[in-house]
Image 1 (cartoon, rainbow, N blue to C red):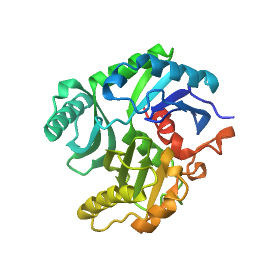
Image 2: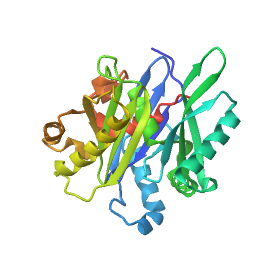
Image 3: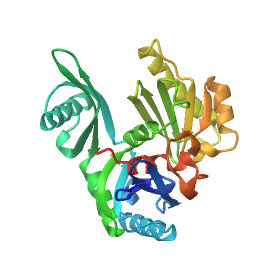
Image 4: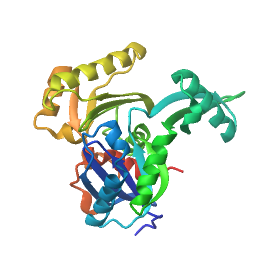
Length: 307
């Protein structure tokens, strides 16, 4: 047996389902337990969502109890459209200076009042030459009131908020756990077809390149609508990358399991679409080997810590 660190409970509050994943990290990353429950405020208006703290907290408690989770330390994944990110290059500097520069870049690029956002970053790459150091940084900004709301809900559920993550970073961590024979191309595309939203994320050269989330205002079975959004993303990518190509689309999200969806998407785009499967990742699953990885992708990813 390998020695495990303290387990982390990853939570992904989707528009249709609330997903939980208890993960232990040591010499290997082990999925201890998975579980989900219907979001009690699915389809609610923004005003109703603002008053839904009690309902969401009760759903978290029920999911936790019904699935036999034991970890109390929570990492929450936020995937709302209001969450923004940017890939930034900075000269060598200390952590405080990096954060200050990330705040400035985010405020300038997105024209936002940065004081109303919680800002964080991760260093994707460190390039060193004989005369200088350059950091490639992923900066992320989340509205502060959104963070405060979910921290309040987690505490009401009797859990301990320890980390706030964002969807693009959770997916990025999972991509790093793809087996080499599967992630052989340098460009990875994840299509997350959820209950109310469609999110397409492109990762190029080992780092997030672009992500787009759109509200689903079409029938679930309408592959034409999904194809249109995907083609727009691919056209944008190819307009800026003339030597790379996307040869596969990895499908996640509950609606991605709709019968015939991947086959129809492949036919309409000319790009092979496949549902994410557990055996694609270098993870220890125990009794969770048959779990729908496309559903739990972000809850597992957000529980994986790289601190």
